[in-house]
Image (cartoon, rainbow, N blue to C red; front, side, top):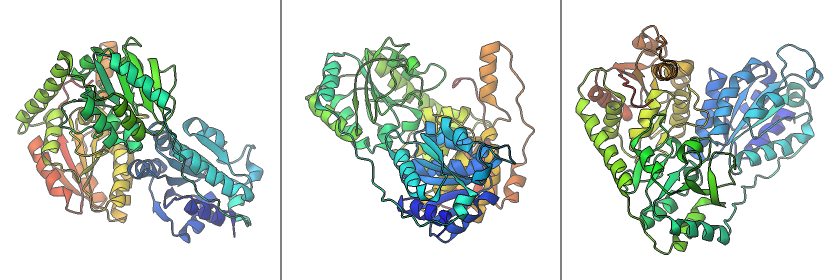
Amino acid sequence: MTGAELFTRCLAAGGIDTVYALPGEETSALMDALGASGIDVVLCRHEQAAAFMASAHGRLTGRPAACLSTLGPGATNLVTGVADAMLDRVPMLAITGQGGRDRIGRDSHQMLDLSRLFEPVTKRSRTVMAADRIPGAVAEALHVATTPRPGAVHLSLPEDVAAGPSSGTPLPSLPPAPATAHPDSIAAIARHLAEARRPFALIGAGVLRDDAVDALRGLLDETGIPAATSFMAKGAIAAEAPCHLGAFGLPATDHVDRAIASADLLLTIGLDPVEYPLTKLTEAGRIPVLSLAETSLPRDAGWHLLAEVTGALAPGLSRLKSALEAQRWSLWPEAVEAREAVRADRAAARQAMSDPAPPPETLVAALNDRADETDLLLSGVGTHKLALARDFSARSPGQIVIGNGLAGMGFALPGAIAAARLFPDRPVTAICGDGDAMMNVQDMETATRLDLGLTLIVWVDGGYGLIEDKQQDDTGSRPDLSFHPMDWSALARAFGWEHVSCETAEQMGEAFSASRHSGRRRIVTVPVTYRGKLA
């Protein structure tokens, strides 16, 4: 067999069932082998979109998918989506074609050092220089991608290695062995908590990744410790839980921030520094921190770390609940005020349902009123993301996907394509600003070709509003970062989609409801008025 055939067999043996690909001349042998392998190959229209699809696939399944590009510009286009998976701690295998080995290290057409290109944005990056190294390279790459903290890995396959002969055998795929927290570490965390009067729990995406939601909720229900989630961990706490104070992470000071600042101890659970600067949460290190995480976290992250527990989160949380011996805390005044203020804001948002060009919180309220636990939402990046993170009430863990490690624009539409393909019976909706929506618009064709049902809701403000706000805050002058008005109906028709134009939140909510189980591809547009609350 060829090196490409061996490589493909190793992918299958390692559990890779999908490759999101934009091929080139240097990947011909690999594409031919993939076509005969039984692995699903999803042809994409841009490499960045392919990487974002693989990233969404890994988030939603917990298993790595692969993305594939050719060398040169194909590889450089792939980098943003690979970095997105890396910083959001998503398992992924990025594969790039490469010129023949005799061209590596020499000035040659489209040749770059791809191992070095991907090294800063992956857990591991290497070029496979001989066919007999393929089994070990693939097995090690997938092992590294899935061990805590998971992330992206990269393999480059020179075209002569792919096309040449091979007689190797795939290595078995072994799941990472879960680490177990040491009892002394649990005891130390429990001791510090018992001494605190106002402990506050900050929940990160590791709780979803480690399937520790039930254990987390058990701990919070038993102890009453107030808690808030990062953007990426929405749904980890039941929306109606008395201890739930919402989400932290807005640039502007919010109700939850004042409650966090009044705490005398922070308990971070599954929280990674890439999700939000710990310096801000800890008041520049003033508030001490206890950490429960999959792996030990950096000491220079801007916190005063008193103790940490590392290992699988679910058993660690269960043991911590037992160690606390039914100790319980009541919400202190600042925590109660924050919870009630969030509830009051959400109630007030519903008063503008019929207003033209409504505020973002009202658009979120319309989604809250009509979504149920079957819905799967994917957010783009921009001011709309802040509104969704703050006010959307997730009904199940991971119901809304909000990337916040790299926070790369252009994720939501490709992510929704991957989600609709994975879960054809669930309503899938991407929510974007008009800036984000246009980043990977070309892959609307991919959704049409695959005959996927999904909805793209676009909040239209006609510019890069979040950046305008930021520059005005920093410099005192407001730049003009506006766009030429879009003909969304023409865009939808060009790709075989439908377009629904709305003027109010009520109309957007109705269009969302009508689209959820239609099996069609729809763009729903609605104007939005941002008033600076979120920035």
